[in-house]
Length: 123
Image (tube, rainbow, N blue to C red; front, side):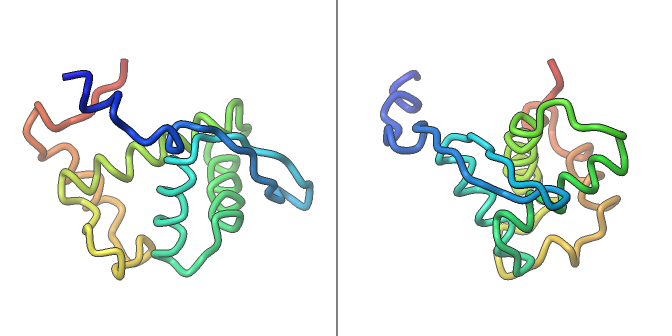
């Protein structure tokens, strides 16, 4: 079992920092390369750059929750949810389909409709 995970390219779990502007302030976000790759795919689907996606996610999270405690962790969770929602069929695997064009309620319902073994549960 572990070989499936341990055989991953070490470059995927190397972390790197990228500079982004959040509310006009330059800040550094450190993530593993795998997460940067997923964020690149998500942002490209809607014609954005990764920094633009990060700024938009930060703005929407701030608007919804008031403040952001750990934005890097939030971005990792976003990547995991994106991949899980692709598995459940809520987000098409065809990257030409923009995320913006999807009905959020329908996407989220697909995760609830997935068989229990395919659902990710909060710990």
